[in-house]
Length: 478
Image (cartoon, rainbow, N blue to C red; front, side, top):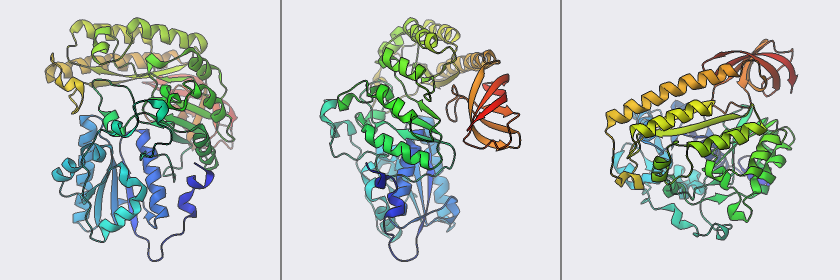
């Protein structure tokens, strides 16, 4: 990747004639946000004009999520809402892209005849041409889904240079003017967790080259980005296919040194792959947030073995102790799955005991559901929906109370808050322990004159409201 490939949308000659309009609707995770910005750049390079309001668009393109049942339902509902607009004459075409479209292809197209097309990742490179053809009355035959892991060599070291379509790795056009932006480290995943179908439609793990990541980081900083949110399906594996499993430890200080960048945050860390060198880098490098998004999923050893994951409550607590020995104020968040096949009441108690001891800042609790194409879908020992719902509610209530207590424990701490909204002497943003959108926020009072969005303000926490904090500004570090 070069500087010019980042700004392709501004440099490619536009086709003559009146530009057609397209609205992008993004669902799901931060990785999808990056994919949508890639699509936006390709649309502009192809002569389309981007609009925010779907009612003003010739084409509505919905970047779907296909992770779990609730996310799939949201995607389908959003597509149907867009087709209602089309029926009213507000839009001429509704198109599904993203994970749900890639995962189900023809089946999704058959079940949603109201949608004009279902496009997969292989269509992204010529997305503008595909949509223009659809608007001109052409048809597009949805793909037959395939296991995208088969598109790359089994050996990670043989993957660099393999010509496989990977969303989010070539061009980009920002759709959000905020001071934080996600930045992709890699695509795909090599893990074989029995509950997860993501590798089948996202493919095997493929790192982006450090030079490409740094080039995009510099471009984002020029666009006013002050926090880089590093995303992938598994950030701890970064570099293994480039011949250096410790490449992230080298890359993070370089990213933090990019002019204009105030904070670098890493997400999607596998506990079993955390290594001492990475912990040291994340807790001691100026500009790198001591923030650990650790995917525990459970704490009972037997449940984790059935998930094809590693660790248990004792090992996880030891990991947290090592992190906090180096950075006592480190932020830690995680997700857990409740009701996995074969889970017992004793397993649930192990999980609850672990959460009480772990003192996490944020916890996402999910009730297990079968996912097509996963090993767990064929497991015996399935629990009934009422039991899963009850256990999920129990763990959710406990997590809410524990994370509230953890926020109260932070009262008195000195925080570095990245301001995302400013109004007079007050503002709202996120401290280093608070990830985007899901981990709470910090309201700062007593801001100095001239404080602006994108500044990093030192503030003392003086109160808590749930997982959110209230703090009093000390000084600006813009």
